[in-house]
Structures are given as structure tokens and as C-alpha cells.
Length: 406
Image (cartoon, rainbow, N blue to C red; front, side, top):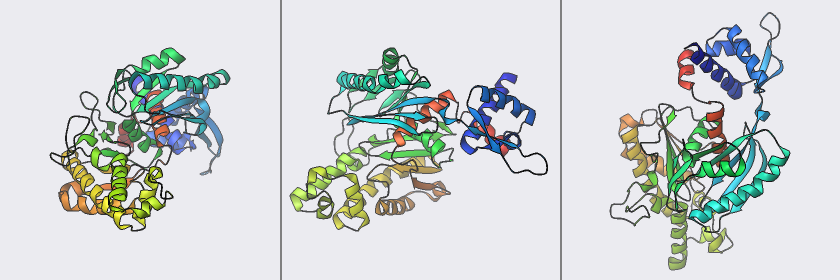
């Protein structure tokens, strides 16, 4: 029990310094509810491990000025990898998420074993020159869409990339001799939103609407994976009974109506068959093949009728899905992400109205819906968050700490 309590105190001291530092011994002792002697012992070990450094002194409250302690983000570095349907992004990050290198490798429609081989080849090109000049790497963290067995590092199911039962952790560790972490991208983003964003919620839905549609779930401050690890496949929730057939075997799946490929197809159909969407296509110099999600969002925000028509359709489908989740799960918050969703103020406004009309009052009490706070490098931060959670036990004892400070 004594060892367990020491571990709890050590993790909480380290993570307080990481999140709120620089802090003094007295501040740490007060927040963790332990003696300053205990804090001194923990700090001595953390400084020996190079996780914590002294940084000047704070204001005096009557005696000697207190020494302040800060987190050392350059204690170690990770190689963060984000697998996408169309590209593979890699970067070297320190423990605060600062990038040292970055590369993006295009996938060019390869799938299955060919995709894995492309990943290993791209990793080799990226990793080997770095390893020769650097010795402080703690591991490779890979995030990817689909159903993932995070404990064993296996991609269980990804229909779009034709990846099934891929023992990715084992293959990458054998190739590069580094510890490897593999996690579902949205589960990783949920953790990143809590560590690097502004999401202090114990019950939360993180909804990503991008190339595909998926979600990360937080229940009692922990990722909820479900029995087989497939929780969060909200993109395959039926929102149109008997609707468009989906690759999952279902019909009327949310993903087929609101993902960017679906919206892009809707724009092209309007342009070529009805000459609608001129305000969107004009932003791509009237080259429909170059239309991006940003073009769509800009047109909607400027009040283009065709863009707003699509926004209305999107909001209806998304509202059905979110209302179902509100009634079933009763989260404190829904956080939205996706290139054609973020900063799309008309969509967010209409979505709020539809949810307010559909959902019971009790599940809307203190409910918040907001955009992601992570910015453009969110997938890389997700990869870092996965490693921080394992390597530094970030968030492991948050409930304990909250109770102590409550």
C-alpha cells in the first residue's frame, strides 16, 4: 500500500509540474495534500531522472524565496506517426509536443499489406538518419483509424485501408528496436484534448467528421473502448433507414452523408448537374478537382445558398447522431473536429438549434458542444498523448487528485 501511495504521489507531482509549473514545494504539497518532506523526496528523484529542473525563485511570503520547479520537455523525444487513408505523417516531438522534424508521405491508394510495407519503408527513410544522431528517443507512437487492440498493438479492422489483424507493434519494434505504441486515432485525440486542449470533462464524446466519421468516448475520466475495442464507430450509426449502402454492410450510415468525401461528391454533383455551388468552385479557380473543405466552409460562412443548403442537410444528420448519444450516454460535452466542420459557424449554429429541439431537457443540463482546441497538429499530439499516458502515467490518478483537492 505504501508503494502504491508513493507511486500516486510521484505521478501527481510530475503531472502538476508538467501542466501548471513552475511550482514551489509548498504549492505542490498543498495541491497533492502531502508533506513538503514527501514532495522533496519525490522532486529529488524526478530531478535525478531529468524529468524536472529548477527554474529560479518565486515571490516570498515572509521568509526565504521558494525555489520553483519546472518540467523538462527535452528529457526525451518520440517519433509520432499518424496513419491516414491518403497519407502518412511523421514527426519528432519532445514531451511538450514541440516538433523537431516532420515529413508527409503520400499513400497513393495502396491498401492491405502494401500499405504496411509502404509505412515501414517510409519509417525507415525517416527514422534511421535521426537515430544515428540522437539517443533520447523513448519510442514510436502510431495512431490510426479503425478498430485497434491498443494493449497488443494490433490493427483489428480498417475496411478502407484493407487492414485486418495487423500486428503493427511487433513488426515496427522488430524493424527499429524501439518501444512502439499503437492506438486508435480518436482515442488518442480524446487524451490529447484533455492534456493539451481545454476539455476537463469526465464524460465526453469526441466526434471527428473528416475523411471518415468516428468518435472517442470518455467515461469516468477514462477511454471507453467497448468489449472488442470498437466503441466509437458512430460513423456507422444509421441516420437514414434504408439509405445508402455502406462498406460495413449497413445502410444509411452517418459517414455516407456528412464525411468530406460525401460532401465533396455533393458539391461536384451540384456543379455538374445543376450549375450550383459557383461560390465554392470559384475559390478553386473554377477547377472542381481542387475544391477543398476550406473552400466549402468559407462559402458557407459568407452565406452562399448552395453551401448553406448542404450545411442544413449535414446538421440534420449530425443532430440525429448526437441526440442519440445524449440520450444513451449523457455526456458533459461533445467536441467536434474536422476540416469542413471546424470554424463552420453556420453549421454549428444550426446544429445547436436542432439538438436543443430534439434532446430531452435533462440531458441538455450543463451540456456543452465545442470545437477542438488542438489546432492543425492534432494527430501528432494524439500520438504524443498516448505515449505520455503510458510513459508518465499522465491522467492515471486524476480522480484521486481531484478528490484530494475537492
